[in-house]
Image 1 (cartoon, rainbow, N blue to C red):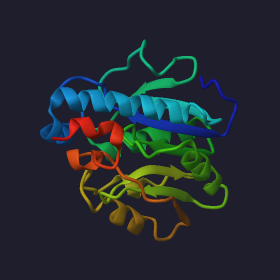
Image 2: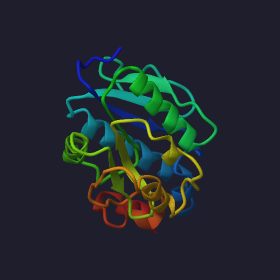
Image 3: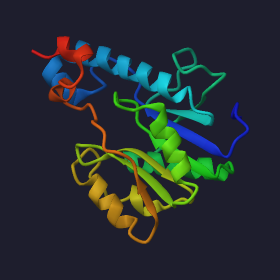
Length: 204
């Protein structure tokens, strides 16, 4: 059960931080060990941002639920992602949240260094008067998606990780009211680290 008595739930999708299995595109530019270190820092950043939001929180693990990690069991409900691709996994997580009677459901990834608490607060507020809220990423995807009702089309027929995800998602949402957050930078490649002095040591 959630530790918050609220209508809002935040879903955080995370990959298990294992060498050679996270940020594979980033690893091509900085090496696997550095990519793992960076991902752990991104996870910690995400944790520190979301912990400040007054909502229920669920962490979805890509491979295996970990009981003793940075996601405190007293604050985060843990679950295993289910599905053959990212779309199916997100759809299942949203469906489960709505089945548990949450009214506003938002999902974020765990590799966005620009994410701040106010983005999440703004997203939940937007769902008061909009069907959907979305946070565009500079790579053509999105870093946040929120809904008041389950809209399954957005999870189907997408090239996940490609640069058309946002465009095609917005097409699926043409008959709904959609609120767009500010565009943020997703960290997928070595060049994505350039804006951040704290990551400059990893760039050759």
